[in-house]
Amino acid sequence: MTGFSTSIAPAHLPEPAPPWPLLNAIARIADAPLGRIAERLREAVLPFAGGDALVIFTEECTGRPQKKAGSAEVVAKVSIAELQHLRSSLDGEAAWSGTALIAGRERRVLALTYPPSNALLVITCPDGAAGSEADSLDMVRYLWDLTAHRIQEKVNDAAPSYLVESRAASAERLRVTSELVDLHSTTLETLLAAARSSALDDAAARASVTDVAARALVELRTHNDRTTDLIEEPVASAFERLRDDLRPLTRFSGIEVQFIEPPLNGRALPGEVAIAARAIVRGLLLAMMEQPEVRRIRTQWDCDGENLLINVRDDGNGGLSTDAPAMGRLQRRVQALAGRMEIDLMQGWGADISVTLPLDAPAAPGDVSGWNLASRELEVLQLLAAGQRNRNIAAALNISENTVKFHVRNLFRKLQVASRSEAIALAHSRGLR
Image 1 (spheres, helix red, strand yellow):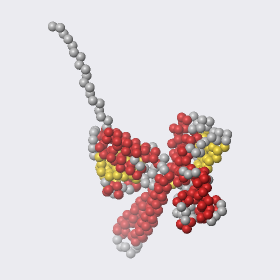
Image 2 (tube, one colour):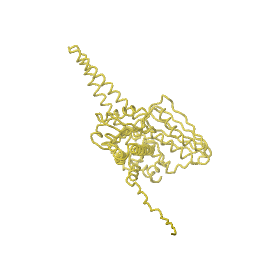
Image 3 (cartoon, helix red, strand yellow):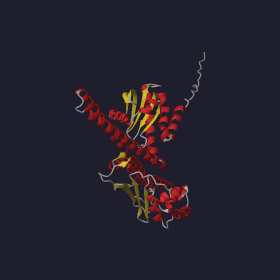
Image 4 (cartoon, helix red, strand yellow):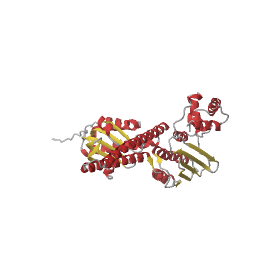
């Protein structure tokens, strides 16, 4: 019998289909505006962790440090104090599960941190909906890291309108908290006085009431301090964060970057000013580093009690392009905080850029309806009042310098003034700055 052999081609195995639901969830996180990023993250982690609510706590967003989605009971009641206490109790752990006080009662939670920004993710009543526990946790960790990084990027590159809204929200939160402190402090101090009164014979009752009220007062004051800490950052630590953020860039660029630190006793910066200041300096450094002849850049911060003063200077030949889109975006960030940017280009000697950012939100403008200004004329007047030149106003409003001059002439006529200085003085008298 003659033997023979037959070769059998291996069966063609179909390639696994791409995990489209997960990929689509990641894409939605990447594209989400800050106001909806918690909702998008919850959609993505539900198959892996379940849970009835998700809360993000990040101090990068000074106006709205909490971002929430899910159960109305949790979303409506969770407090900053609870989240701060949970984060501090983690003691450096990247992921933790257990029972914690959230939204007024003890709940099962899964908590994850993001060390680069000290952000916290809390999922209440997790159930590990799919896969092994380790695999599910790894996927939640991946999605959380992606989200926290995107929040950092979005805040750093925030549009001017976001900075204005953030500042307004921070100021309003501080105002409401201060009112609550005043109200409850008066109530509790009255309670203490009554409990200590000699007219009350029950010594045990007085002692108990005194103890409860005293602890409530301490807790209320502590809550106020925490709220203030959230919307302010010491100028020295804000500058140190800038140095840390820029360290990878400066390490590999081949350009020497010198940091001149602000005074340690400088006034604390509102959160949105600190974030904007770091983004502005980072943008200026990147623009300066694009010049081939630059070898050294110096950045300096200072405080005069009312403003953060920023100076960035390079040793190039003064060829920095002030018309570049990136410079226009930086100008708009500065203007959103009622600040000023002055650019001095010295041919053969480099660029010297000074930025002034007010630490206090501008006062609410007075009534200017009697001037009968068109909306564009009011925008031009606001930029005039901020000390901007025609060229900068044109760039900020995306109009020509000739159009700016046209609006300025109309402003002079309607305000009945004869010069820019008179127009600026009149605008300042109505709270426009």
